[in-house]
Image 1 (cartoon, rainbow, N blue to C red):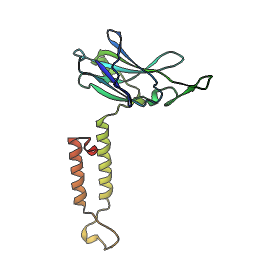
Image 2: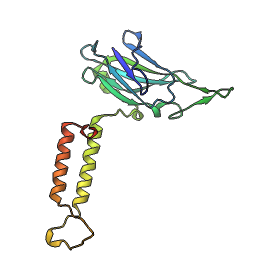
Image 3: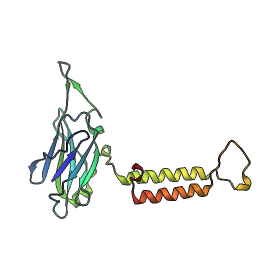
Image 4: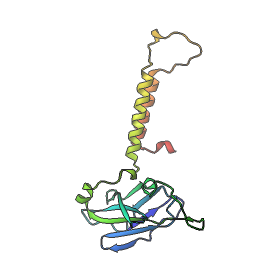
Length: 195
């Protein structure tokens, strides 16, 4: 029903069913992992009105401590979570044992099937910062608006221009056209800039 992707590793599908509504992925050597991708395989959807709360656990001397990352639903079947700041010590934390060898840690990702109404009331840890295209689009749009406003603030009419052979001038209409084209392309495909 679920799969887990960690950069540089094979897709992990060795999910353990802990109970009728709880599932668990064990992640070996988790010290250098920064992000995880969790997705539904498409074989079995959630029952109508249900989704999966996604939790992360890093080993602790006090026992497992589960932190809510976010959720999966039939409408949102995949997501990326940043887990590097959720680990004890905040990031790559190796511990030396008495023989000078580095101890590696095993982490866990838990999925709990719960009603969508319950998922909507839960608040994920802020450090998990789910990566999303919407956040990138919003950032890009704000950056473009800032650049356009900044460049436009230097606009002068042709009668106000003083000749200066060492400077090149770009008509504000060219900047306006570029701005509109970039916004249109961003709305059509937020990843157009990758090609």
